[in-house]
Amino acid sequence: MASPQRPPPGAGAAIAEVLPRTALVVSEKGGLSEVLCKPRIMPLKSVTLIKLEEMEAKAAQVAAAQQQQGRPRTGAPAGF
Image (cartoon, rainbow, N blue to C red; front, side, top):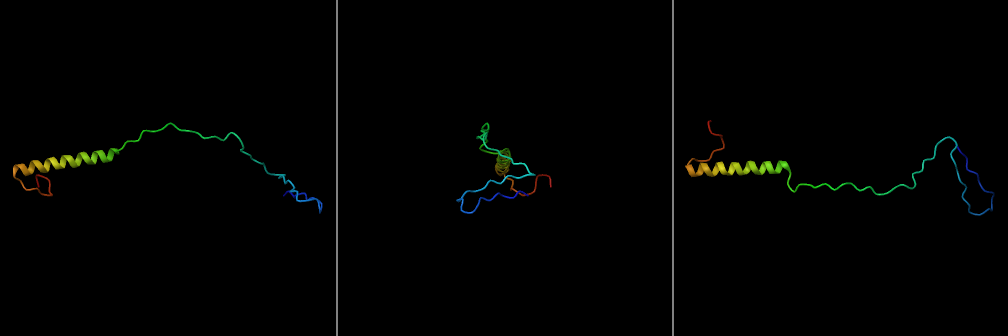
């Protein structure tokens, strides 16, 4: 371990520099700047939401067609 060199008493408030003897000193000063990415266009609706809306619209059409034919609407699919 490095031992700091102490100034003689009464030399003022100077701070002694301590350098490591066995480890490396890594400095990353300079060269740091903002990196801007290409903007992405994000959809207002997700693909899943669009599919869900299409399924709901088809279900509403089937329900309307059944009501026009006079059939009561049931929870079970046709054929059961």
